[in-house]
Image (cartoon, rainbow, N blue to C red; front, top):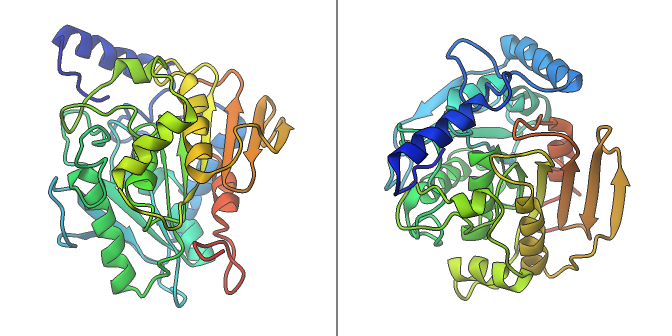
Length: 341
């Protein structure tokens, strides 16, 4: 949880609240030896498959000590499949609050999927040891090449692009909670780097903006920051003044019972990104019970995709196939989704 610059008792209470929501809400405050507990059988089966395949990976997670401009001392960990194809895509996966790069590597199947489909996965680790949340508040992170955690992560991408001759038009980012917030930040501050993002239980770009590198915004978290699409878009455009190039598409998912980052933040993200990407706030298609019973998918053209998960709290189960499909990461060769599409 991000530190609020006010009442220390409030900070402690919020942290206790964050770590006690549901007895199985362990991925936010995990035991070092305990894998994250999911809420549904499909998610549990996915986790079991992940832990099984993790034993047969073709390579190992590697720490890269130096990779370029890194003002906040974010650490880089990378998984490169042994049989890497030419011009591979890159997937960045920032961790949740109280999480680590190692935990994302172990409890998300990106490395195994990278082995199968031929992409590199990058696992950043924040230097904020107080709560291990990402800097999504500072002017530095909210500005293109301005600094903050965001620049450190982008430096990892730039390093990997050069080192492995990876595809600069197929760089993707996905995360949960604080990782979802960073996903929004990276799409807003670095539209020239990313092709798409998938944010699970996050907030709009700039919603947590404040005077510091780790600021908690109770107003944003509780869904009280409400703006028009145009107002939200202006915040994104201010991150990279004068930029007129490609803008990454976004997938955002949220539970209706989320009382850490309230579900109004899903609405605000849709308003923000439909405005930024120039599509209508009225969905072009609606699919109920997709991909799970009680989930509703709304698409806004082919640039914005939003999932509302009925009855789900902040412990939203990650459904990797949904992300893989949106990023088109199972595709190889010509005709795959990219910044050139």
